[in-house]
Length: 211
Image (cartoon, rainbow, N blue to C red; front, side):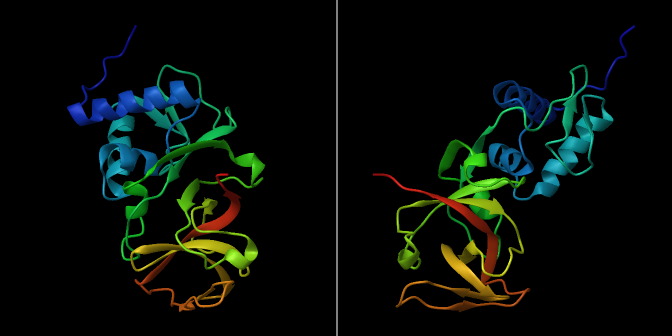
C-alpha cells in the first residue's frame, strides 16, 4: 500500500528534481552553496527552509539536520558522500567582504578534479583565480588558480583566500587578524573578528597553472 504524499509547490518540485539530477550525475547530493547558486538564494537559510519542507512532506530524509550532503531521497538507497573522488568545485566570482557568501553565489564557473591530489582533509572545496603577484616569491602567480578548503579560522601560518573589500586575495595568515604578502610592494591587511572589510574564506591547499 502506497501512502499519498502532500503535493509540492513548483519551487519545491524544481529543487527535488535538481537533487535527483545531481545525485544521478555525481553520486552524491549537492552542497548548500550549490543549491544557493542554482536557485539564486541570497543565503543558506532559504535552502534550509526548502529542504525542511521536502522532508516534512515525505520526499527526502536527512541524516544530519542542516546538512545537504546527508540527503536521502525517499524510496532510494542512502548515498555515500565519497562515492566519487571527482568533485565539482565552484570557481568563485565577484563579491564583497560584507557579504562573503556572494562570491559563491556569483561563480565564474566550475572545475572538476579529485581533491585528494591536494588534501586528505574532508570538507567543502572551492577554487579562486589569483589576481595579483603578492605571493610570487612563493611561486604563486597572478592567473594561477588556488584550490582551497573552506574554513573560517585556518591555522596560523596557513596561506589563505580572503576577501578584502571587493577583491579576493591570497595571503599568508601570519598571526590572528594579520594577512601578509610574501612579495614586496603589497599592503599588509590587518583585521578584527567583526571586521566587515575582510572575510577569510579558507586555506589554500594547492595551485593549478596553465602552461
